[in-house]
Image (cartoon, rainbow, N blue to C red; front, side, top):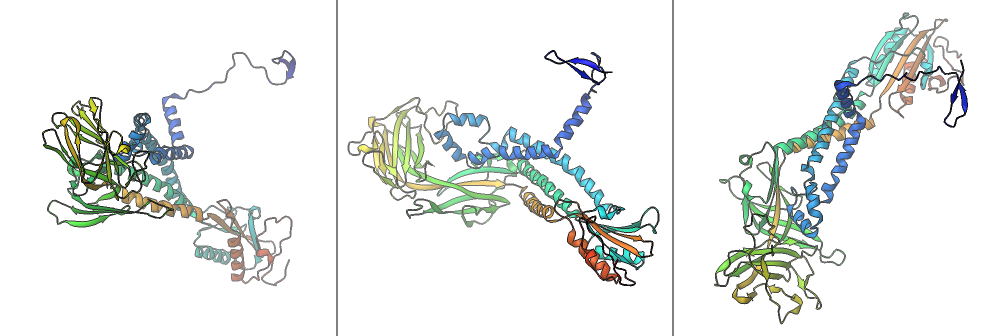
Length: 574
C-alpha cells in the first residue's frame, strides 16, 4: 500500500515502505558492567590503540629532550630557573623537568604495556597453532590462481606426487599430501607452504618492544641515578648524603648503594682556536682515582665524555664541567671566615659563570657576594668586562658584595648559586680607577679588596675546575640491549621473508594421461611466487621425462591463450 508522507516543506511524497507506529522504537540491548569492561578491554588491546599509545609515548618524550632533566643534569635545571624565572615554576609543576618520572608519562607507559600484552599474546598462540597445523588442501581448480602451470605425463600419480613432495621439501616448504574426497582417481595433490617466519619475526619485534618496556620498568624499580659536582682536589663516596641529586628505585635502599669512593685529581679541557669554530670544545679529561671498596687499592682513571668507568656494576659518566674560584674572606675582626673554592655555573659558550659566596658567620654582619667569573676577561672600554674564550687564560672575578642577614635559617630552601638579598644591604665599592666594573669588585688572581665600613676583606686566590659525575645503575640494560637486537632481527625477518603456498595436483584424464598442475598463491602483498612455480613445474617435468615447453611458464590469463601439453609417451603436442 502506498501512503503519502509529508516532507519538512509541507509537500507530499509517496512511499511503499510499511508504516511505522509512533511508539515503534529500535530495541538496543543494555551493555551492562561486564559487557562494558569487555568492550573496553577489546578496545585497549586492539592494534589501533597500541599504535596510538606508542605515538603518544613518543610525543610525551619530546619535552624530556628539549628541557633539562633533573636526573640527568640538575645544574642545567638551575640555569633554566635563573634564565626563565616566570616559566620555570609552571613547567616544574607540570613535571616537565622530570618527564620520565612523571605521573602522566607513567600512565601512558603502563597502558601501552598492557595493550601490547593483550594484543601480542593471542596472536602468538594463534601463530603457534598455525605453525603446527598442516598446509591447507589444494583447491580443485588451480587455474583460477594468479600463477599456474601445467603439463601432461604418463608417469604414475604416486611417483609424480612423491617427486613434487621431495622437490618442495628440499626447498624447505612444509608439505602435506592427500587425495580428493571422491578418491585418488579423481585427483590427488601435494600442498606446500613456506614463510611462517615472517609472522614469527613480526611477533618477535613486538615481543621485543615488550622486553624494552620491561627493561625500563626493571631499571626504574631496581636501579638508581644520581649526580655530584666534584671540585679538583676533592671527592665523594657513594652514600645518600654525598649526592647533589639522587633518585632511587622503589626496591632500592641506602644499603644497596655500592661502597666506592672517587676523587677528582685534575680536570683539563681543550677548545678550538680557529676562526670557524672558535671556542668550541674538543676534549674533556677528568683524571680521577677511585676505590671499589674501602679496602680496595686505588685505581687511576681518565673519565671522558661518552667513555664512562664501571665500578661494582655502576657506571660513572662525565656529564659537565665548570669553574670554581678560590677565595679567602676575612670579617671585620680579621678572622678567616671562608676559605676555599666555590662552584660557579656556566652561562654561555665562553663559560661566563655565575655563583654566590655566602658567609653568614662573619662579624659584625653576615657577608654575601653575588659573583660572575670570566675565564678569559677582556675589557670592552665602554661596558662591563666579558669572557672572550672558555679556557682560563685571564681569569677575572666580578663580585657584588652585600652585608646583613642571608636568611639561611628561615626554613626556606635556597639555591647555592644565588643570594637572597631581601634582608641585606648592597655595599658601595665603586672603583675610582676601574669605572668599567661599576659598583662591583673586579678582581684578578692574587688581588685583595677591602670592604667598606670595616666589614672585612676578600682575596681572589686562584681558580679550580669542577666536573659533574652522573652515577647510574640500571639492571635492565642487558635486557634492553637483547630486546633491541631481537627487535632488529624480527623486523628484518618480517620485511624480508615472503609467505607463500604452492600446490601440485595430479588429475587422471580420459585418455589415461595424467594432467599435472602447479599453482602458487602469495600470503603477502607483492610476493607472487612466479619463479618458484615455474621452477617447480620445469623440475617436475624433467624428473618425469617430459620435455618442458611453453606450458610450464605461469599463465595469468589462461582463458585468452590455449594451453600446450606434451604427451610423454609419444612426444606429440596437443
